[in-house]
Length: 250
Image (cartoon, rainbow, N blue to C red; front, side, top):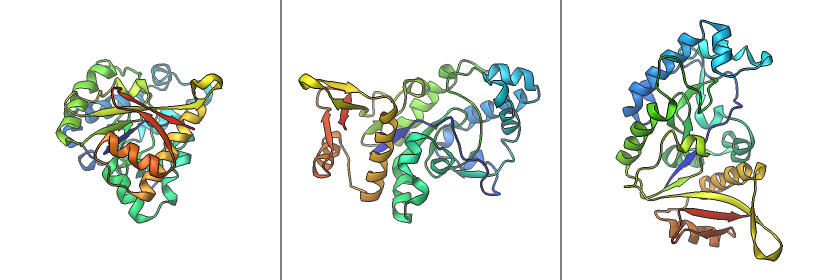
């Protein structure tokens, strides 16, 4: 099983002295796309006013232009430690032991805007870029990323993908038809037997689910295997037989 996570706009600052090395990132076939985005993003930072406009930064966020200017030399952190926010706070990767973190390295990718999908332990710097931002000199993000990312995922040939990304990031790298995939919706029971989708708690539940998988490290190679593990773990996970979506009931 391969899990695809969305990133977060909020990030941990600082990191280790090791600078970004694009060649060391997972999915090396995405190197050309990564380099083009990195070059465009750092060049944009030469004009603070234009960068603030393109990146849609408010007056209190203009210091993040300088963050992007230092992308090639800034310290790095493993991607799963770089991101903060509801999902990543629930996952709480820094508190996991070595075995759980090795599981994350093998099974989890995080879909970043400047680098595409990166491995959970791939070292990346702090940055500011949203999924839908079109950088000067580059095609629209979906045109820039979608086909190369789909090809890279197909080359990995995972038994199936659990796609926890938001729609904005799915557009930057749809799972190819050759790879079985299923998305996850977080819902709660409502009166009358219906279910209601959740918003804020959606991210928390997804982070907690990935953490539990990392701690228990089950061998899951199919959607039915995921449902069997969930049943044994006391989780309510429904759907998946004739649907491309699972419901996690919380």
